[in-house]
Image (cartoon, rainbow, N blue to C red; front, top):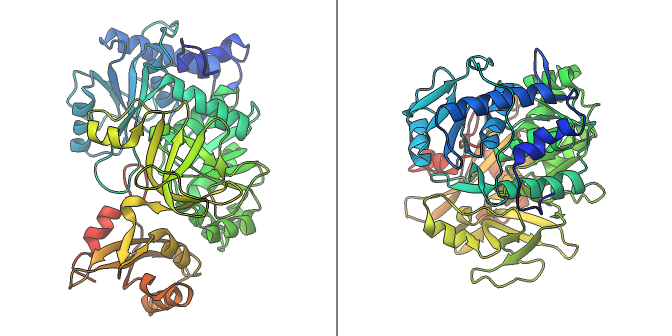
Length: 502
């Protein structure tokens, strides 16, 4: 699939279904209607023609900032059909954030909701799930693009600092779709997918659009911010076979399923669920399996490699691990000098394969650090066991030195997550009054938790199960954890919150 030099993923993921005779199959499932492949292709063609009429040329960037909808999918494929580059951004960005993205991308056009007013030459406004008036042809053949041509910008999912724009190619999307979705995980034409992350997040772009469409399946889309209640309603409506999940929602679904309102928690339609975006604590995996009985495949992907390249896979699950490298990719665990470390030792994750980004837009220093020839040198710390299973340890820039010893927040977070009063936890390091770094925890309590004495109870829980230097010196109780634009815990915000309070 990914070997040909001439490649346009709009043809690969959408137009080809029509030539295969699948035009009348359902491609998208929405709250009020279904769209067939032929209907989605027609809408994509009209978007593409409109963008071309507005002056968008091949390789120019187009901002795409819409809620999940048929129009989102159609606009994305329209951009790709004319050989332009989609810059997918969170539609909830404030005006200044969206303006910064427009400036960074030098975008000629932005496809936005009515309340967005980015400073661009042209806006294509999509209101309340209705496309703009597209009085143009439904016939548009994808332009010839090279597999190495830019297709989509994906923003890195770091937990601190400004996100980096990884420039990804048509070939990257084709490669991972074949290796991970089709060969390793077995997406099929009978699958219906539903996703917690939204389509602007690369994890969902693949799992809830490109993957099902590549095999003639269908994707269920909803624009609302997901909650456990909304998600169970969507599952009841669409009866998906694959659920694209995150650890945060895994915890919320479990809590709702174990509440008095548990009658809504029916996952009997699922073949499996996936988890990515953040580490999945083994205790949370165990509670999920105990509650729902549905397999949950944890994995790791990055914007720099587009999607998942190491994962638990059917017939090969090791709870508490990220699984094994997806066949077709190569993984290494290396020290700070780029030398391989033995199995069982912690090192920086390196990966290579045909989904490697071209680099970061306008950031040569960080590109040089991350892209080492054929390899992407991640900032993630992992260890690989003798059986080839990869265990996530933490981000290199999140590691703390406490009392002269290294502490990895994920270990403390997992310990906290085993306490019945905790729904979610995050740990960061902040300086105390003497300037020494100390671990501080932020906890979202379960609905049944009693706040009185909870901080001391959780500190004692950590002292009981961990070395004393690892226990959090303070525990903040929050209604929710702050998130980055990609939904990951915003550790920078947590550090700022804790400063001066340890």
